[in-house]
Structures are given as structure tokens and as C-alpha cells.
Image 1 (cartoon, rainbow, N blue to C red):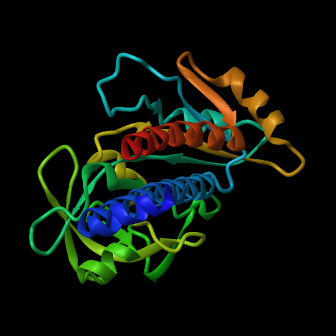
Image 2: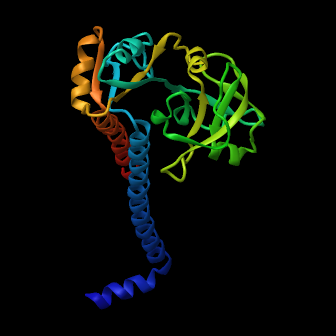
Image 3: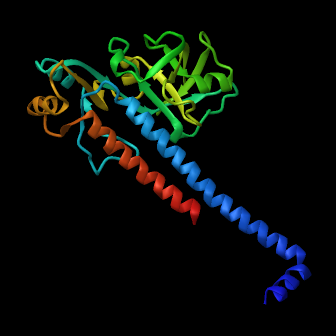
Length: 268
């Protein structure tokens, strides 16, 4: 039987070669899919952990099912003052994250909408900032921005240059005052970061007087669970609070479910 099989293969060398190539290619595709998606999962988990560095508790809005696709519920910025006044609280910072597409020197967007992130940095509260400057300083004012090191290096931008940024409105130009990177991850892949001070992020990203989240640090001797219990009574209807670790797990679960769908599609 083996002899007959080998004779058949020898008589159809091209077909046999193509069949073997198809098998090798299929195995490589499957292996590559798992490596690719596992790498993304690890990177996202790292980014989420970094994003909540220094946050013992996170205040956010409850999920609302009737919001337009892609929009997130927000909380009133004035809630941060109410939380800050609690005796268990050491520090508070409002966080904003939305889509902000960086524009290259050729006039084209540098990355896709899903990979174009706009964030704020509260320079007065460095404990909540997962980013580190590699050049320049943090932006301060309505015409200033910092960008990620990958975008700067790959597209020829430096401190002092101007760069176009698009959110929901027309493209605006900002002066680059700083280049930043995450300290625990080597590459962001295709992700781009547009980094503003808090008032600029609120105005440019259409979130005046609002935050996506309020990050809270506990005073020494106060546990995250105790902090959550102290915050809960001052929250208005529609707001919720969780420990920083719980928020990381929740966000990671949602992201990993999305990646699992991508993995199944690629394997199919």
C-alpha cells in the first residue's frame, strides 16, 4: 500500500508539491493566528494594567444600552470634587479617552479610527499617568499636544513641529510639545496616541464638563475595598465605582472577547 502511494506521488510531482505546500501554509496560518492574537491579548492586558496604575478605585458611568455605537457613557466632572472631599481619598484625577486621528505630513491619517486614541494627561497627578516622556514636556493649553514615540519616529515628527488631528469636527493643528511612551511595552503596533491636557481634551473631544472615568487613590491605611465603600454613598444615579483591579479585569474581559471573535474569523 505504501509502495503504491509513493508511486502515485512520484507520478504527480507538481500536485504532490502543491498539496504539501498547502498543508504547510495552513499550519503556518493557524500558528500565526494564535501567535498574533495572543500577542494582542498580552499587549492589551499590559496597557490596561498600566492605564489604572495608581488607581485604587475607578468611578464611571453605568453601561447604557441605547447609546449610539462607539459612544461611551460619561460622568459629570464636578463629581470629582465630591469624591476628593472624602476623608479616605488621597488624590483624584479625571480621565478622558476617545478617538483622535493623527494626520501625517502627507495629509493622510496615520492609523485607522479604531487605532487612533485621544487621551488627557493630568500633569499635577503623575501617579495616575502610565506614560513617560522621552522628549519635551506635557502639553498645556488649547494649541499643544504630545504624541507617542512610534508615531513620531515613523512619520518624521519632533518636538516643535505641528501636526493635524481629527476628532468629530474639522482637522485642527497642534504644536507638539512632547513625545511619550508606555514604560512597560516596547511597541504599540499601529496604535497612535494624541495626548492633551484635560481642558483641551474635554473641548476637542466633545466632553465639556464630563469625564469618562474618575481615578481615585486611597490614603495610607485605606484598602481599595474600603475606598469603594466610602465613595459609593456620594455617587449620583447612573454612576458606579469599582476597585482598580476589578476595573482592569472587566475591561480585559471585554477586549479578550473581541479578540476571540477575530481569532475565530481568521481560523475559519
